[in-house]
Length: 246
Image (cartoon, rainbow, N blue to C red):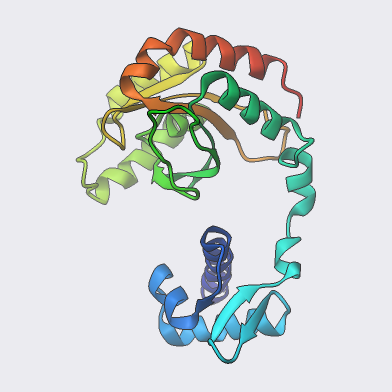
């Protein structure tokens, strides 16, 4: 059973690899990017080829997803992320009114994934790479997601983090839980220079339907500008989310 679960996990990682790459790739490129053994990567890609989820170019030796891959989960996407769905409209409105980078985030284990990004349209800005992944305890988007969990769950997660000896040093669990308590009370999180120097992020939780994983919506930009516009951004986020119906 363990072997089957491991293989299933690797298949999903291959799907995510192509979703972020937006281009064909050889077996060696996939194996290197995902740190998989070359032989098992070849077997998995050939299996997905046989199932119709990938196609193969014999000349370039590259694999790429098929339409069958593209339609996986489209019913969820259409409900939440199509052009007529509320989340994209909300993100477009926030970008137009703040001119800052707008991020939709979701937890992935000990990380937070930025699953949809609208880049800033301001003259002075910084770029967030689509598909970026951050340690969940650092940016505001991750903290908002953790604030929806119990202290016991968060403490257990942080003990695992500290046991792995993160480069930034151990996370002070008691102080972090106190910060989450403040986030729950005020309804938002703000982080400054948590990942990228001289930047800040303000995030709130999205009211997702039951059965869906929690999502966070964030506004991010240069630190000085975010500090100056903090109150206006908070009012705007709160107003937009109050009227959101998913």
